Image (cartoon, rainbow, N blue to C red):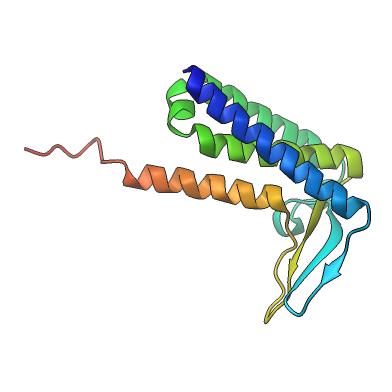
Length: 152
């Protein structure tokens, strides 16, 4: 189980540190624009696609409860943590980093803006790591053999 905890916490810390370093670069004034992608500072007071921005400062407390609930659940259900340690570390690292932004900047620091052919949501490294974590969980879940089906 020590290897599981090491994988989980390593992924969480690495994602958190990388994300905060990148965000500091943008908060300190970095800006770059091209024909398809702009790297420009934006503060998202909501969640994905600015949903729930009407919750304002309460959103960070809801996010604390959600992250806390997930952490309690995965440490209570050690098999889930063991099976998905890397993916859960990526998810939690991104979630905690975005949560810290809400306290430091009153919104999540977003900076990647795709505008080639269509406008897409502005996102950050933590968002990408959360998505990668979800994809890994789905991939591992779908490739598991069905326990209900018995083969003769």
